[in-house]
Length: 352
Image (cartoon, rainbow, N blue to C red):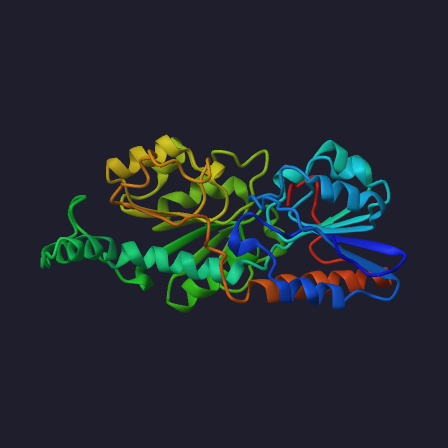
């Protein structure tokens, strides 16, 4: 635990057990250097879990340090934090997801909760594009043929049955993106620039169409849009109403040969229904970065499925990650100090 003398305390709790989410030394030092006059910064050395929607439990060290803290910079609002921190007024999460943090205790506390939505959009959109191309251009077939030292052009030429690559051009595709926030917009910009028509689903369609979308519709129009979606991208937060959003009924509405991408939360997808659609070749391929259980169990059928591309919840990894996280946090810290509105204030009712 480190810090310097001051009257207002910020606790920084970013020693994630996931290496790519663990704060590097230079970033920790930058936070300390950015402290406004009258603030002390206390860095927690104990490890924390940076799961999708925040830490699951505060360490003993964290509970002791936050007893006199005004601000907390970590991964979500870990269990026990609010009870130990009577002076806490602001929490900023280095994660984008907030589901596990939105509790009755948080609602009753009056604590302002901000997150890092938007920080992960650019690299995640790159992963989505790469994953779609993997199936659109038959690279899954190419990888298997290379491993077997097999030269066979036929799967790339014919477009019949599950033993064919079903090679297409990106500009042919209609892309339906569920979630038109930072991630969904970054996805739409990439695909629209390559000639695809992108339709977005957002909770408040009256806010209009961000860059890259040809149009925006509300959640009630999802079933209407699915039959024309060559690619379905899930980029929406997990809320009470979105669990198992993609179930057997909705998978059946997709056209044969569609590609499903999930970079949001594993719980948005009904796994058994998706596996059934893949096995019947109704779905051409699935690009999955998030899962109901993480790490993905070794006996999970996704691992060995020839039509599934698995990445271990790393779609947001980027060398620019900590620069973006700190730019957002430091801007909010300045705003907090000045008493001006913060960015990325979480809507506790909406769940994001």
